[in-house]
Picture 1 (cartoon, one colour):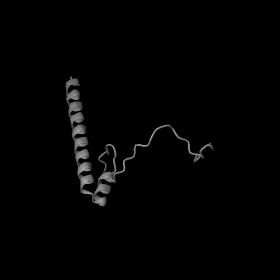
Picture 2 (picture 1 turned 30 degrees about the vertical axis):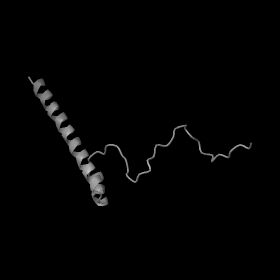
Picture 3 (picture 1 turned 90 degrees about the vertical axis):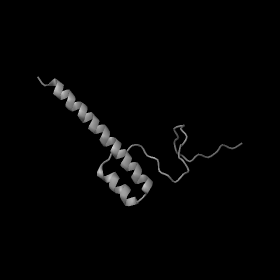
Picture 4 (picture 1 turned 60 degrees about the horizontal axis):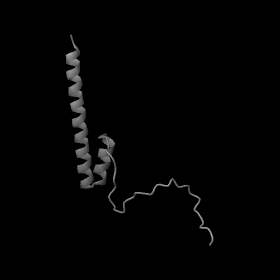
Amino acid sequence: MPARKTSGKKTTGKKSTKKSSARVESGPVPPYGDPIRKAIARGDQREMKNVAASARKYISDVQSALDQLDNAMKKGKR
């Protein structure tokens, strides 16, 4: 039985986990102006809602951390 020809590409042994759906999956996006403006430009309502929710969560987390920092600085003053 003849050996199969290979494409010459090296493989890492990991299988691709691409989904066949048209929806693009991504991780958290920092709420910088550029990703927000790009979501607006694309006009996808679902994406805009996701970006807005992500940005609001990020801002809330940052505000909470700043409040904790302010409290720690107040306690440190003598």
